[in-house]
Length: 312
Picture (cartoon, one colour):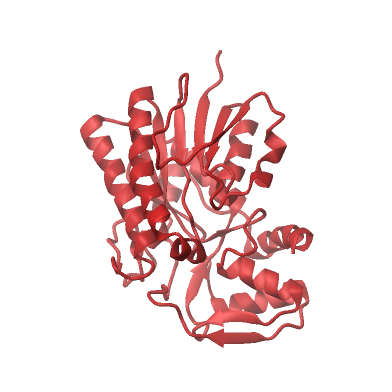
């Protein structure tokens, strides 16, 4: 029987590279696509010798052509950290609008199922806690984060339109904070920043008073959730993340303890529209996908630290 073929965009990124690994392991033929704007070819270098892996250096904002049949598409191409999307606002908007449009067109022509990677940013700075999939969000469309938040909201809208109007098989995941090996050290998010600073003996930078919360999910758990959602029959958005909530102050202290660092915590002003609370309600994921995170934060941080020690 012919192997199933899957196209993964953003393949050289943190999540994309782990997804390539997972689908290779599951016996799929994997086509990775990335323009390497924020991705790192080293993340997938180990896959190049494999017969079942192909790589296309391509920007999905431009027309996407892949010869042969495709069974599934995972659209994970996008700058994903505030540093990236503040530096590249136009590309961020284009990859989730033009890029998603191109890939939905490809899914329609190939009769493929497509899963798009939305995020908890569609909830903005939430007024509802924890966030359920039914919450519409509190987003500033013209603020600095609007380029990312609204790009993801548009992505969901056009995906539902293709599902309803063209009958394309679509899946939408809303990803909450995720961490693990292959994160970029300089991507500006809390975990890589704290860990890099602690390992270098620099002051740890906490924005605001550190009372804002995040919920961190280990990458292997997230990948399992994506795998299950792709193969499920559910086409509405699903939150995938770890509901274990922690303040950034507590998180900085955890990282200091784990790294045995003598760094001090310093405070800087909170960026505009920075969410005060982030915690997924994962009732749907539990009921529909029989999924919940398995790796606790202590174990996940230990695994991530090993990677950072090699790269800082």
